[in-house]
Amino acid sequence: MKLRSCRQGDALYLFLEGEIDEHSVSGVRAQCDRLIDANAGAKCAVFNLAGVKFMDSTGIGFLIGRFKKLQKYGMGMYLENPNAGADRVLTLSGVYTLIPKLQG
Image (cartoon, one colour):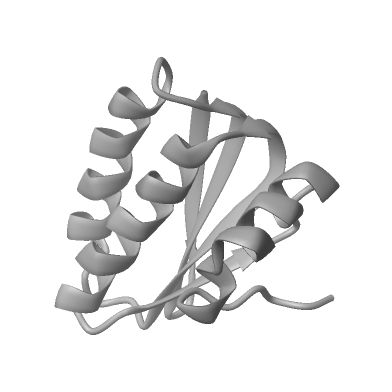
């Protein structure tokens, strides 16, 4: 899995690409946490999931973990552009009740 990021104003954008599963998530988790720490002054983080091809329960755990980390900094978290498969997993798991999906 690959991670790109950019900061636009008060928002940190994180672009995930590839598969979010137990084999790929550890390196991206650490990279993501470093980016959150380095951008602690941002108001929110937006996780763009357009490039995610597959996500299982490990992906849910990854997102919930980042949500908790962002809460410690008082930052909001949003998800955008999940594909149909990821959207279904996120909907059925109830993730959207914690982490809103941006429409548009």
